[in-house]
Length: 188
Picture 1 (cartoon, rainbow, N blue to C red):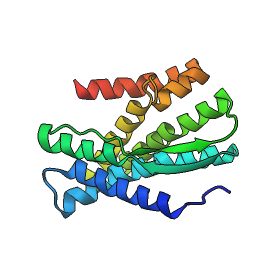
Picture 2 (picture 1 turned 60 degrees about the vertical axis):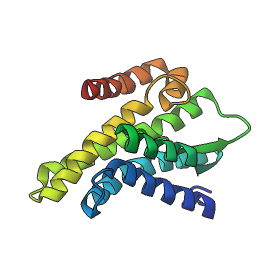
Picture 3 (picture 1 turned 90 degrees about the horizontal axis):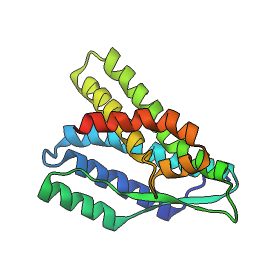
Picture 4 (picture 1 turned 180 degrees about the vertical axis):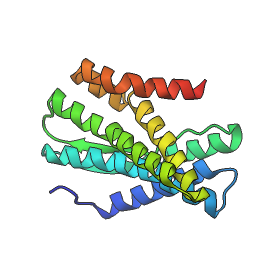
């Protein structure tokens, strides 16, 4: 059944979103920065992972998100000590006797494409906003969702891009190359 959640999965999703919000808001943790981080990054993370889950379930797989608590703690430590933002919150685990390369590629592609859609929703919010908080949320949500999409399209395991390029290199190139270019241009 599509959309069924266990209590463990709900707890792991909630904990991951909260931790991600703290990591992105640090060192200026206040209601404003937490709100911006939870809306911009939290929504990108949640919808990315849920899309993987729902598409996998569409293909008849059992799928559940599990937090990687060690990755979240490492991310917080790196932010506190080095000022580096790194998140590895967890993943959707997919169980099925056999997934074709196409099914696996489409499941993988669904997460980054969700981030692209969210990025443009946030862009519209920023564009039409006459409120500084909404403008900031929209601008931040736009940038961070494109970054999440590009980072996840890297063609190396265990990233989504690896599964997509293994299935269809042309689709990976059309989607992944511009997104990865966005990430690289905004890092350097």
